[in-house]
Length: 157
Image (tube, rainbow, N blue to C red):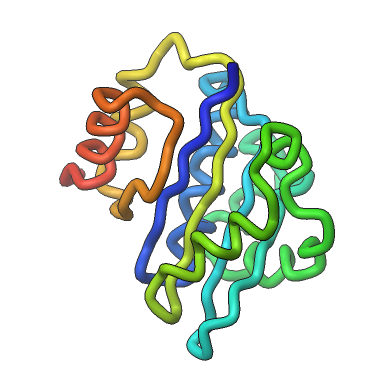
């Protein structure tokens, strides 16, 4: 059964940075990502959804150019149409994503992530996510796993 988690940030580019990090981990065969959607709430309070689509993986020669830049976020503006096909399949609608992202501060962002099978190397995944920041907004993880994820996000690098 897939696991959903949503991480919220006070900055617009942070969710995109986490998306790129998770995509890098998937390229290393550490994660089984099924879908990711970045939601950004602009300064006027309008929420836009950006589906990950088929952007470069860690092995792609263009990946370093995307990593850590807003270029990927701008590039994703073209994909706002049918956001979240795998998410929709498990009942996570665009309306729900926009409603949840609407609770963010203006200029904030959130990453909606659907992961298939659990990672056999969860400790290293949590270590990789250390210090990214953000707050777990909602999840289908157990309370214990949610707490471990939140602790990892807060951990100093």
